[in-house]
Length: 261
Image (cartoon, rainbow, N blue to C red; front, side, top):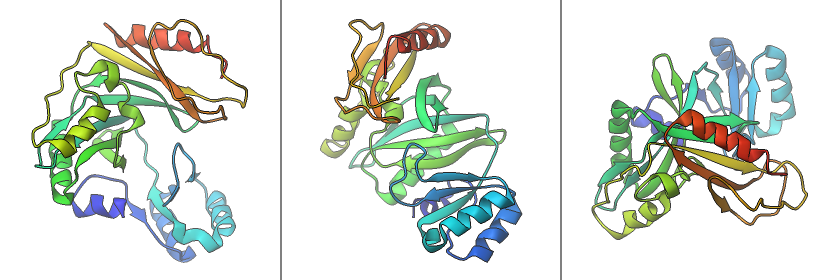
């Protein structure tokens, strides 16, 4: 239904098919040469997503999921330069503001680093604003894109505050959580000002089931979620702010060496 809403309101997205019929899926594969199968429910951080680049991979997937094909959509696989994200906020009266566009760096299908600010895409902002108004959305929404040679292609949205916006606690005059509440409490939303020239957010992702010992000092601002350690689980994040993206990325990667996750 999310993908169908993108098409309805003319947001650029990857061609897709939703079908439980093998011949139809195979025909779609032949048209596009490679597909991404995505589970329609309970998919996150790469879970429920399968890349199908060969005929053998497709046939194996169809056989293993024969009774559950309706639980998936199949999207055209596209080449992209990098991944971009943004948080948009719409008030109950229709006032819309945008947080900074950011670049996201993935590791093992999970968001590892968020770097910003990136140059805003004003044409895309207009399309998103129209979309939010048409569906009557109230609150913060996270949007994730693929950057291609021809522009941004919308991958998916999250109708809530989002991990790629956690930098806002330290980078912006209003964080995404406060803004989410203000969307339902008032008609006009406060303008967002950057409090720093550049920022980087590092996600702390579990690698084992061992209890985590938190280092005594950090060069960034640590947000610890208090979760039990588990491989692949986001346990917290650290925000770094400063003059250059290069120096902040270096800080983030050095910081990670002090953690035994």
